[in-house]
Length: 278
Image 1 (cartoon, rainbow, N blue to C red):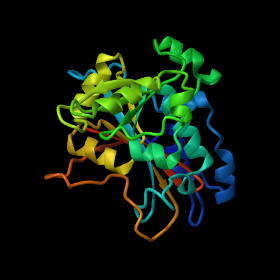
Image 2: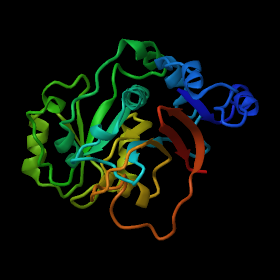
Image 3: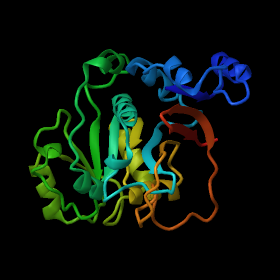
């Protein structure tokens, strides 16, 4: 894997050495690929570390992790796995290992067959040093609370699963969630969840390093509420056509919000980018 941005002494030297028809560094394309190496989990963790300290006035940092094709599809046949890659999944696991909590929409839980986060020995020391438990909690956003409590997410989580919902949620459904062993977190005055309230509620539970993995409807809500701090986007060198969802859905915002590029990695044509709010 290569770092394309921010430019380092190594990448600058490779670019200056490139001759006509050559890959950066004055070598053939294959040689450049071999000159890179598979990043260790420690290197990935350093590259994707949460801001420390947080920007002034911020108590939490919410990042999203999504994958999309060249033509904007966030899924193929209803799932993200077909447009992912092994390195994308390593970054996926690293982002989870750095987070206090992973927030996901109920529909994505259903479609992807979500499982609880697991403790990984490779990140144990890092999490302990950050004052974190062995694995992040999974927080499911659901208005209806119509969830499959037979999923491992509810039957065998290492950390109790959280379910974010509104104050007007049906009492019998709240009771069903609690009976399944999950913790109900009220984050809205109506039936649904208010994104800003969700962030505040999770912070109140001690979760300040937040990660959302979608789906598109939930990400659209974070974007519309202007609570998203960072987008980690994998661009897959694929074309799917069709009518697949984009990474964010829902009503458009009144004024597009511009983010700035924080880093860009590349491997086998896949681009792994990080964009942050200014």
